[in-house]
Length: 280
Image (cartoon, rainbow, N blue to C red; front, side, top):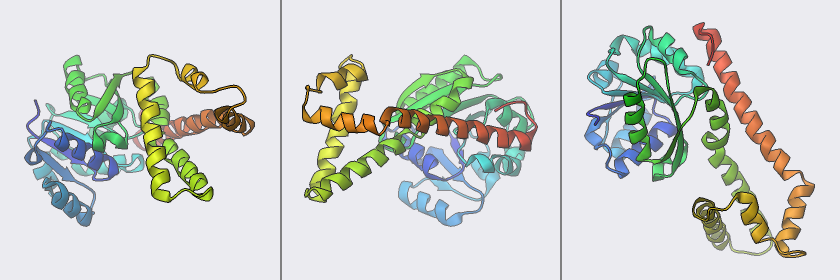
Protein backbone atom coordinates (compact mmCIF):
# COMPACT_ATOMS: atom_id res chain seq x y z
CA UNK A 1 0.00 0.00 0.00
CA UNK A 2 2.80 2.40 0.92
CA UNK A 3 6.24 2.21 -0.66
CA UNK A 4 7.89 4.95 1.39
CA UNK A 5 6.86 6.66 4.61
CA UNK A 6 8.78 9.75 5.75
CA UNK A 7 8.72 11.05 9.32
CA UNK A 8 9.42 14.69 10.14
CA UNK A 9 10.24 14.59 13.83
CA UNK A 10 12.02 11.81 15.69
CA UNK A 11 10.62 11.98 19.21
CA UNK A 12 8.90 9.37 21.35
CA UNK A 13 5.70 9.29 19.30
CA UNK A 14 7.57 8.81 16.03
CA UNK A 15 9.57 6.01 17.61
CA UNK A 16 6.43 4.37 18.99
CA UNK A 17 4.86 4.38 15.54
CA UNK A 18 8.00 3.14 13.84
CA UNK A 19 8.46 0.36 16.36
CA UNK A 20 4.85 -0.77 16.06
CA UNK A 21 4.84 -0.75 12.26
CA UNK A 22 8.05 -2.76 12.05
CA UNK A 23 6.96 -5.28 14.69
CA UNK A 24 3.69 -5.93 12.85
CA UNK A 25 5.51 -6.10 9.47
CA UNK A 26 3.19 -3.48 8.00
CA UNK A 27 6.32 -1.69 6.82
CA UNK A 28 9.83 -2.96 6.27
CA UNK A 29 12.70 -1.00 7.74
CA UNK A 30 13.84 -0.05 4.24
CA UNK A 31 10.56 1.81 3.69
CA UNK A 32 10.90 4.15 6.68
CA UNK A 33 12.77 7.44 6.46
CA UNK A 34 13.20 9.96 9.29
CA UNK A 35 14.50 13.48 9.65
CA UNK A 36 14.36 16.07 12.40
CA UNK A 37 15.40 19.65 13.09
CA UNK A 38 19.07 19.13 13.89
CA UNK A 39 19.45 16.33 16.45
CA UNK A 40 21.79 13.94 14.63
CA UNK A 41 22.45 11.94 17.79
CA UNK A 42 18.75 11.08 18.03
CA UNK A 43 18.67 10.05 14.37
CA UNK A 44 21.73 7.87 14.86
CA UNK A 45 20.07 6.09 17.78
CA UNK A 46 16.93 5.38 15.76
CA UNK A 47 18.97 4.19 12.80
CA UNK A 48 20.99 1.83 14.98
CA UNK A 49 17.96 0.50 16.84
CA UNK A 50 15.58 -0.04 13.92
CA UNK A 51 17.91 -0.08 10.88
CA UNK A 52 15.80 2.60 9.21
CA UNK A 53 16.94 5.46 6.98
CA UNK A 54 17.69 8.56 9.07
CA UNK A 55 19.16 11.71 7.61
CA UNK A 56 19.33 15.49 7.87
CA UNK A 57 19.01 15.59 4.06
CA UNK A 58 15.38 16.72 3.95
CA UNK A 59 15.08 16.35 0.18
CA UNK A 60 16.28 12.75 0.29
CA UNK A 61 13.90 11.84 3.11
CA UNK A 62 10.80 13.42 1.56
CA UNK A 63 11.27 12.82 -2.16
CA UNK A 64 8.95 10.11 -3.53
CA UNK A 65 7.38 9.45 -0.13
CA UNK A 66 3.79 8.21 -0.36
CA UNK A 67 3.09 9.47 3.15
CA UNK A 68 4.69 12.22 5.20
CA UNK A 69 4.10 11.91 8.94
CA UNK A 70 4.33 15.12 10.96
CA UNK A 71 5.40 14.09 14.46
CA UNK A 72 7.00 17.16 16.00
CA UNK A 73 5.88 19.12 19.06
CA UNK A 74 3.02 21.59 18.46
CA UNK A 75 5.20 24.62 19.08
CA UNK A 76 7.68 23.38 16.46
CA UNK A 77 5.19 22.73 13.67
CA UNK A 78 5.51 26.03 11.82
CA UNK A 79 9.31 26.08 11.81
CA UNK A 80 9.43 22.39 10.88
CA UNK A 81 7.06 22.69 7.93
CA UNK A 82 8.72 25.90 6.72
CA UNK A 83 12.03 24.04 6.60
CA UNK A 84 10.74 21.23 4.38
CA UNK A 85 7.65 22.40 2.48
CA UNK A 86 9.63 23.04 -0.71
CA UNK A 87 10.16 19.28 -0.90
CA UNK A 88 6.47 18.41 -0.58
CA UNK A 89 4.64 17.15 -3.67
CA UNK A 90 0.89 17.60 -4.28
CA UNK A 91 0.19 13.86 -4.55
CA UNK A 92 1.68 13.08 -1.14
CA UNK A 93 -0.58 12.27 1.77
CA UNK A 94 0.26 14.17 4.94
CA UNK A 95 -0.53 12.49 8.26
CA UNK A 96 -0.30 14.74 11.32
CA UNK A 97 0.02 13.39 14.85
CA UNK A 98 0.68 16.90 16.21
CA UNK A 99 -1.58 17.58 19.20
CA UNK A 100 -3.93 20.53 18.89
CA UNK A 101 -3.15 21.47 15.28
CA UNK A 102 -6.01 21.19 12.78
CA UNK A 103 -5.88 19.83 9.27
CA UNK A 104 -6.69 23.31 7.91
CA UNK A 105 -3.72 24.72 9.80
CA UNK A 106 -1.38 22.11 8.38
CA UNK A 107 -2.59 22.84 4.84
CA UNK A 108 -2.12 26.56 5.42
CA UNK A 109 1.44 26.03 6.60
CA UNK A 110 2.26 23.88 3.58
CA UNK A 111 0.86 26.62 1.37
CA UNK A 112 -1.57 24.77 -0.86
CA UNK A 113 -4.45 22.35 -0.60
CA UNK A 114 -3.03 18.96 0.18
CA UNK A 115 -4.68 15.83 1.55
CA UNK A 116 -4.17 15.90 5.31
CA UNK A 117 -5.34 13.27 7.75
CA UNK A 118 -4.96 13.95 11.45
CA UNK A 119 -4.41 11.15 13.95
CA UNK A 120 -4.09 11.02 17.71
CA UNK A 121 -2.35 7.80 18.76
CA UNK A 122 -0.67 7.16 22.07
CA UNK A 123 2.68 5.71 23.01
CA UNK A 124 1.26 2.22 23.44
CA UNK A 125 1.69 2.12 19.66
CA UNK A 126 5.18 0.74 20.29
CA UNK A 127 3.69 -2.59 21.43
CA UNK A 128 0.65 -2.63 19.15
CA UNK A 129 -1.86 -1.35 21.71
CA UNK A 130 -2.47 2.25 20.72
CA UNK A 131 -5.94 3.77 20.84
CA UNK A 132 -5.92 6.07 17.81
CA UNK A 133 -8.55 8.57 16.71
CA UNK A 134 -8.48 9.69 13.05
CA UNK A 135 -10.11 12.55 11.15
CA UNK A 136 -9.65 13.87 7.63
CA UNK A 137 -9.13 17.35 6.29
CA UNK A 138 -11.13 19.02 3.53
CA UNK A 139 -8.84 17.90 0.71
CA UNK A 140 -8.53 14.31 1.89
CA UNK A 141 -10.80 11.65 0.45
CA UNK A 142 -12.39 8.63 2.05
CA UNK A 143 -9.72 6.55 0.33
CA UNK A 144 -7.02 8.58 2.08
CA UNK A 145 -8.82 8.06 5.38
CA UNK A 146 -9.05 4.31 4.78
CA UNK A 147 -5.34 4.08 4.00
CA UNK A 148 -4.40 5.93 7.16
CA UNK A 149 -6.79 3.82 9.20
CA UNK A 150 -5.18 0.65 7.85
CA UNK A 151 -1.77 2.03 8.82
CA UNK A 152 -2.80 2.81 12.40
CA UNK A 153 -4.69 -0.47 12.80
CA UNK A 154 -1.30 -2.17 12.70
CA UNK A 155 -0.48 -0.57 16.05
CA UNK A 156 -3.79 -0.92 17.88
CA UNK A 157 -7.44 0.05 17.60
CA UNK A 158 -8.76 3.03 15.64
CA UNK A 159 -11.82 5.26 15.70
CA UNK A 160 -12.87 7.81 13.09
CA UNK A 161 -14.15 11.01 14.72
CA UNK A 162 -15.16 14.52 13.76
CA UNK A 163 -12.27 16.96 13.89
CA UNK A 164 -13.91 19.07 16.58
CA UNK A 165 -13.72 16.04 18.89
CA UNK A 166 -9.96 15.64 18.54
CA UNK A 167 -9.18 17.92 21.49
CA UNK A 168 -11.22 15.65 23.76
CA UNK A 169 -9.56 12.58 22.28
CA UNK A 170 -6.18 14.13 23.07
CA UNK A 171 -7.22 14.58 26.70
CA UNK A 172 -8.50 11.01 27.01
CA UNK A 173 -6.61 8.47 24.92
CA UNK A 174 -3.68 10.63 23.82
CA UNK A 175 -2.62 11.53 27.35
CA UNK A 176 -4.49 8.67 29.01
CA UNK A 177 -1.62 6.17 29.43
CA UNK A 178 0.18 8.66 31.66
CA UNK A 179 -2.82 8.84 33.98
CA UNK A 180 -2.74 5.07 34.48
CA UNK A 181 1.04 5.03 34.95
CA UNK A 182 0.64 7.71 37.61
CA UNK A 183 -1.98 5.61 39.39
CA UNK A 184 0.24 2.52 39.20
CA UNK A 185 3.13 4.51 40.67
CA UNK A 186 0.97 5.34 43.67
CA UNK A 187 -0.23 1.74 44.07
CA UNK A 188 3.34 0.45 43.93
CA UNK A 189 4.44 2.93 46.59
CA UNK A 190 1.57 1.86 48.84
CA UNK A 191 2.34 -1.85 48.32
CA UNK A 192 6.01 -1.40 49.19
CA UNK A 193 5.15 0.75 52.19
CA UNK A 194 3.03 -2.13 53.52
CA UNK A 195 5.80 -4.67 53.05
CA UNK A 196 5.59 -6.16 49.55
CA UNK A 197 8.74 -6.60 47.50
CA UNK A 198 8.82 -4.05 44.65
CA UNK A 199 9.03 -6.71 41.92
CA UNK A 200 6.08 -8.63 43.34
CA UNK A 201 4.05 -5.43 43.69
CA UNK A 202 4.79 -4.43 40.11
CA UNK A 203 3.83 -7.85 38.72
CA UNK A 204 0.57 -8.01 40.67
CA UNK A 205 -0.48 -4.46 39.82
CA UNK A 206 0.47 -4.79 36.16
CA UNK A 207 -1.60 -7.95 35.77
CA UNK A 208 -4.47 -6.30 37.62
CA UNK A 209 -4.46 -3.41 35.15
CA UNK A 210 -4.27 -5.81 32.18
CA UNK A 211 -7.09 -7.93 33.59
CA UNK A 212 -9.32 -4.92 34.20
CA UNK A 213 -8.72 -3.73 30.64
CA UNK A 214 -9.58 -7.14 29.23
CA UNK A 215 -12.76 -7.24 31.31
CA UNK A 216 -13.79 -3.84 29.97
CA UNK A 217 -13.08 -4.99 26.44
CA UNK A 218 -14.64 -8.45 26.48
CA UNK A 219 -17.28 -8.66 29.23
CA UNK A 220 -19.85 -6.44 27.56
CA UNK A 221 -20.50 -4.76 30.90
CA UNK A 222 -20.09 -1.09 31.72
CA UNK A 223 -17.29 0.10 33.98
CA UNK A 224 -19.90 0.96 36.62
CA UNK A 225 -21.37 -2.55 36.54
CA UNK A 226 -17.97 -4.21 36.72
CA UNK A 227 -17.09 -2.03 39.71
CA UNK A 228 -20.35 -2.87 41.46
CA UNK A 229 -19.88 -6.59 40.81
CA UNK A 230 -16.69 -6.73 42.87
CA UNK A 231 -17.78 -4.35 45.63
CA UNK A 232 -19.18 -6.35 48.51
CA UNK A 233 -21.01 -4.43 51.25
CA UNK A 234 -18.60 -3.51 54.04
CA UNK A 235 -15.79 -5.31 52.23
CA UNK A 236 -12.25 -4.33 51.36
CA UNK A 237 -13.11 -2.93 47.94
CA UNK A 238 -15.85 -0.76 49.38
CA UNK A 239 -13.41 0.58 51.98
CA UNK A 240 -10.94 1.53 49.25
CA UNK A 241 -13.59 3.09 47.02
CA UNK A 242 -15.01 5.11 49.89
CA UNK A 243 -11.58 6.63 50.44
CA UNK A 244 -11.36 7.53 46.75
CA UNK A 245 -14.81 9.11 46.98
CA UNK A 246 -13.79 11.09 50.06
CA UNK A 247 -10.94 12.52 48.00
CA UNK A 248 -13.34 13.31 45.14
CA UNK A 249 -11.58 10.90 42.80
CA UNK A 250 -14.11 10.98 39.97
CA UNK A 251 -14.21 14.76 39.85
CA UNK A 252 -10.42 14.87 39.98
CA UNK A 253 -10.23 12.56 36.96
CA UNK A 254 -12.80 14.65 35.10
CA UNK A 255 -10.78 17.76 35.92
CA UNK A 256 -7.65 15.98 34.71
CA UNK A 257 -9.21 15.23 31.32
CA UNK A 258 -10.66 18.74 31.14
CA UNK A 259 -7.24 20.29 31.76
CA UNK A 260 -5.58 18.17 29.07
CA UNK A 261 -8.39 18.94 26.61
CA UNK A 262 -8.18 22.65 27.31
CA UNK A 263 -4.41 22.55 26.84
CA UNK A 264 -4.92 20.94 23.44
CA UNK A 265 -7.24 23.82 22.53
CA UNK A 266 -4.67 26.32 23.82
CA UNK A 267 -1.94 24.74 21.70
CA UNK A 268 -4.20 25.19 18.71
CA UNK A 269 -4.72 28.84 19.60
CA UNK A 270 -0.99 29.42 19.96
CA UNK A 271 -0.37 27.95 16.53
CA UNK A 272 -3.29 29.95 15.14
CA UNK A 273 -1.43 33.12 16.02
CA UNK A 274 1.55 31.86 14.08
CA UNK A 275 -0.29 30.75 10.95
CA UNK A 276 -3.22 33.10 10.71
CA UNK A 277 -5.65 30.25 10.16
CA UNK A 278 -9.17 30.47 11.53
CA UNK A 279 -9.14 27.53 13.88
CA UNK A 280 -7.23 24.51 15.09
